[in-house]
Image 1 (cartoon, rainbow, N blue to C red):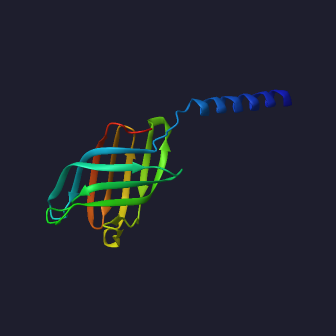
Image 2 (image 1 turned 135 degrees about the vertical axis):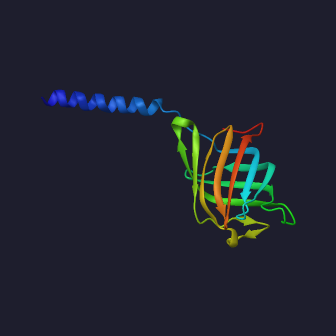
Image 3 (image 1 turned 45 degrees about the horizontal axis):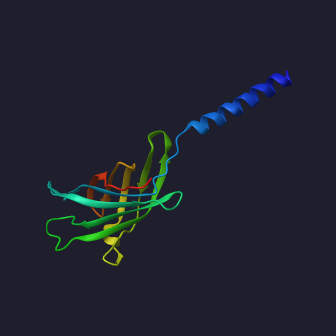
Length: 155
């Protein structure tokens, strides 16, 4: 009886190892994306900016950085700025060859310093080598971004 149980235990371990080896890996470490930014102005209108560049960097096992380049969040903003969102939780999703993005209570950096009045909350998104999509609140303003990969994205 012990031999049968040992056989089934060994067979189960071997099947589990085979299944793990068959799961594709996700190795999205960085990429550049061009896309559409839409900001809810909370007055029934949306400010939309096309051709916004976003850079994604995933240097650590579980955290990533999103950098939005030359963005405006409202028509009355006097200038464009670069905004860095650091310490975004990034979780590999091997079956979809993607990385899930999650974040809450992240103070972004812009114009050389922290911007605590525009704290990032409810960040949720997905990134692949081909595209990135995320939504979040920047201060009181909900925004969404959808972008396609620029040429030369690395995996």
